[in-house]
Amino acid sequence: MSKKNKKNQNNEAKAAQEEIQEKETLNAEQQANENKETADNDPEKRIAELEEQLEHEKSKYLFLMADLENFRKRTLKEKADLLKNGAESAMRDLLPVVDDLERAMDAINKGGDLDSLKEGVDLIYNKFVKYLESQHVTAIDSTGKEFDTDLHEAVTMFPAPDPAMKGKVIDTTIKGYMINDKVLRHAKVVVGN
Image 1 (tube, rainbow, N blue to C red):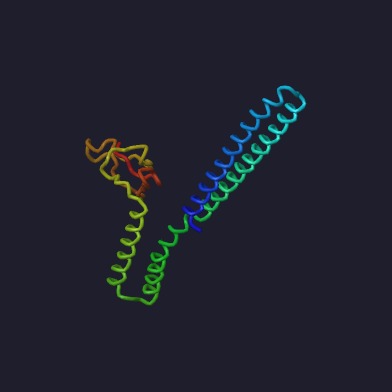
Image 2 (cartoon, helix red, strand yellow):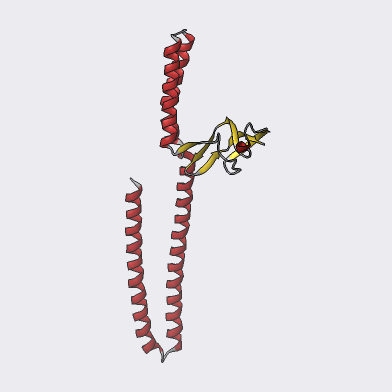
């Protein structure tokens, strides 16, 4: 059953429960008003009616608390399932890239043509980059840009070949990546001094 169907069933069940509770509340109020008129003369009847009404309210309260507890348990289970299986689709989409890499390794071991091997590795690389882009992962363009501690990690300072390069990234030793405008990995860079 899909989540939408479960949600619709839950919403329908809650609406039915609310409607029943409203009817019960109206009936209890009407009965209380009727009983009040007759019970004004007899305090023992009035006490019995109030005790009955209290029991009714207690049972409603317990029912609602149990419903809330069930909701909490269901929500925790759904969160656990999401965390457990969240990476499933990402890993499934990476499997073709692994298959291509295995074929490339087989070709290298068999001593295939170097140009065709290079072309095959380029195709695999491009396929992998396209996959990353589909997952909103982009490379951080660093070389020649201003050094930014939010995006870059300086591995060393090097004398700038040009005064205009002071405080700028001279070289990128390891590319950085972002996912949805959040840094996934800082770029490791050489900064001009």
